[in-house]
Image 1 (cartoon, helix red, strand yellow):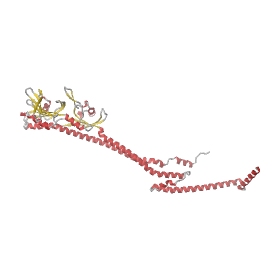
Image 2 (cartoon, rainbow, N blue to C red; image 1 turned 60 degrees about the horizontal axis):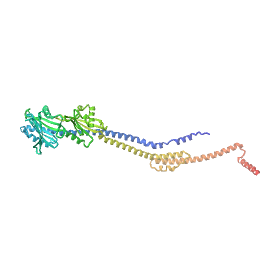
Image 3 (cartoon, rainbow, N blue to C red; image 1 turned 60 degrees about the vertical axis):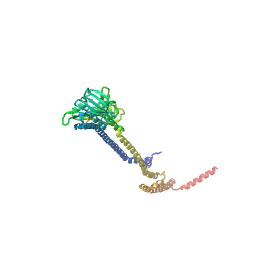
Image 4 (cartoon, rainbow, N blue to C red; image 1 turned 180 degrees about the vertical axis):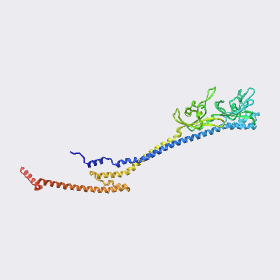
Length: 492
């Protein structure tokens, strides 16, 4: 039996197995349409994130600059006052408003100044002649007079000051006190101008503290004769307190060091010095008991070759050794006209500036995904709306093509009612399909009739060929039937 398919049957089967192009477009078109959208969303998202990082870096730089300026302004406000007091007192001495011949009046004058300038911790004057000293010292809210006598045994007497600035009871006595041998006095003589002493520690009645003194030599008016030295003490705990205020509501920390890297002030609760009882030594930042300060100091040493090399504002990034959290540190020199040369170090977690960028990035990603999903669904819906009528037309074409499937024009009836181009196409297709269908039917009827006539003609031709054209087939059949009937009747 020959099972080979004819070319016509092969073509038909090939069309049946082939996936219609519109069926594939139903799924590919949305993705083709979404490709530019995905590209745009990705590009815009990348630009937004990149711009966010740039904005965060600018905000970081501006925020750190603003904070540094705020610290400098506050430091100048604190550190200008001691020199301002010295200037007032020097002018008063030059104009004989403070009579050094009546040296005991200095105590009451200093007491009045201490009541006005509450940020200073001591005001004093040491004389070059005889080495006398008169001063007022603040410990907390309490003020005491320090009165130094040259005779009989260079005694320094600490006297309580009452609410009216008068001397009260004697609190303590110290022997062999000569102001001319003190560091603050020597510093003024060496500089021959107003300046700062080195930072040194002083034990008060309650605790040890770091101190800085503004000193100014006092000369006789119109000559270079030295009358003595004015000094105003300033305790550095006030700077630490101020730094703690700045950091109280933030995750940032601040500390100040000198060029050797030794601590001056800090917003942390670290100890700025070691008190062994015999000596008080300032702590190096790189050996601090605060890990953040220690990590920052080491990072500065590694990345900037130490504190002494920093001449302008610098920024570094590093990780905390305990939390492994990324930090940004800004190091800015602080100088004043009286010789201070410090470094202000501001430490801020990088996330404080980058959190907004991360939030923007997350929001951008979510919006991008949402936009893509919405666009995909919308694309599928629109594509389905566009492709579905075309698929119906495609199925109708198959029905016309396949003789075994009856054509159902009602299935494209709704499509032909559309007012757009697809509706017009469907209407024209429906009319064309109906015409083709009728033509096919008429053709099939004519072919059937032709086949019948052909078969009849073939049978007639065959009969003529057998009988040679002289015997009537019908007559032969009749005679044959008569013979069979007779035979049958004889048997019975």
